[in-house]
Image (cartoon, rainbow, N blue to C red; front, side):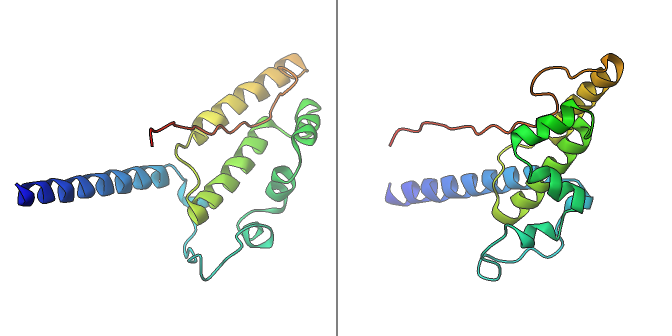
Length: 149
């Protein structure tokens, strides 16, 4: 009985480890190749992955966009200075870089975000006005699961 319980525990441990690896691999597969980091440093090698470190993977415009606050982003997108697509792509790119460095994303919807941005840009072009007060502002959601214990 003890041997069978031990085997069951070992199988469960292998099952969750495989499921976790499969999920991590799936999330990584959603990151475009051109946004992949070739040599990811360990936490010991690179303690701070913000600021100048993450900037090396972004172009000047992406840095400007992703370091502008929400009010500033909306001011630029609702005036037509920035397209919703360029804003969405900049934030998606930065999120992809961050995920590779610190494993922070559980789900990735980059394609859907860019498709929605394209719709917003099309509306803006056709109607000469923003689709709403948050026109072109990307949104990221955090899921929280309550687990007993």
